[in-house]
Image (cartoon, rainbow, N blue to C red; front, side, top):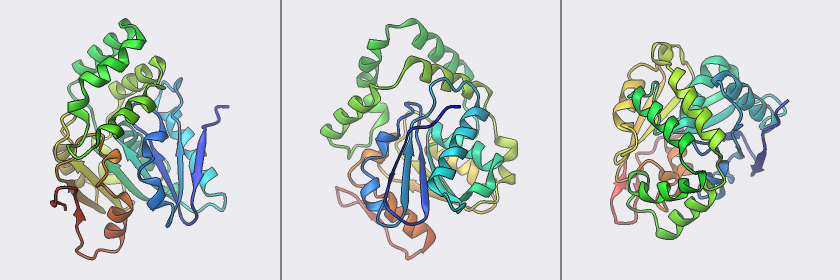
Length: 260
């Protein structure tokens, strides 16, 4: 049986971060210090050989049980592909989720032709070229606030991703479609969407989902791009606190603006 590699920091209610297409929980590094003061934060690595969403759902169930040996349901926070996995998870295992947070994700990926091209391209190119692809597409991924040093760290951490993992996750998205099941989600859900996400239409998708999930909240992240969790001015601990205990506060950004 596959044993997901996990890291746990902090004490309190369990919070599990579900990583995106690169499959590494290491990209959550900026958010862990503040969150671990309130939560038991768990990160893990997606299974590269997982070729079906149901397989990744069961892996996530094992991670949640490890995060909460006493059976307390977890806050599940999924980013991008991890958001799609988190939506699938809450539909299949709602008893394991106390609250759901999904960032820059979608209930269905379109256009499907783009997935087929991506799968073919990744299979055909030398894998070492993936690092160059990441650098050439950086403008589509990162927030304008993200420091160059953080982007270099992003390159370093994502370089550990494998061809097998990428291809399997892209193939999963060809079959993934939870649009008709969104009204079934009864767990309190926060949809976060980066205003300047040039990889997927996060704002449009978040509005679509929030209109269909009964107990949901939608929040835009102004000035941010797709890979916004490494931006210095995005504080997930504050966002969660304001969602759970609304106070009318805003998130200050590095240039004096606010994320509302």
